[in-house]
Length: 69
Image (tube, rainbow, N blue to C red; front, top):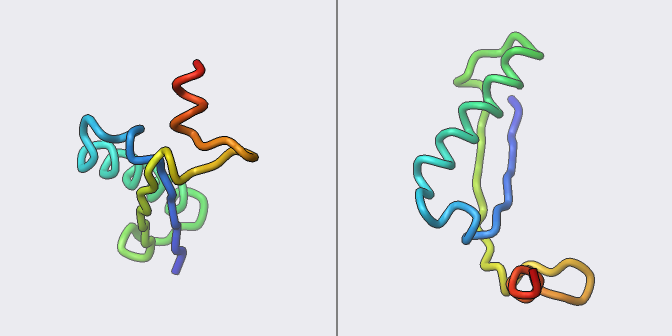
């Protein structure tokens, strides 16, 4: 049973979290079922949301990187 863990910066999905998660889950599930022949009930997708100030690229958090443009 495939288990997919997706981590996203909160702000990326802030305008429609439920809708965007559902769309992502549907596409990920379709890719896995298409490649493996499993049913969609065999695929688990879990989302973890992280604040931009808590996600770092090197020594700089994503919030700061976005402000710099």
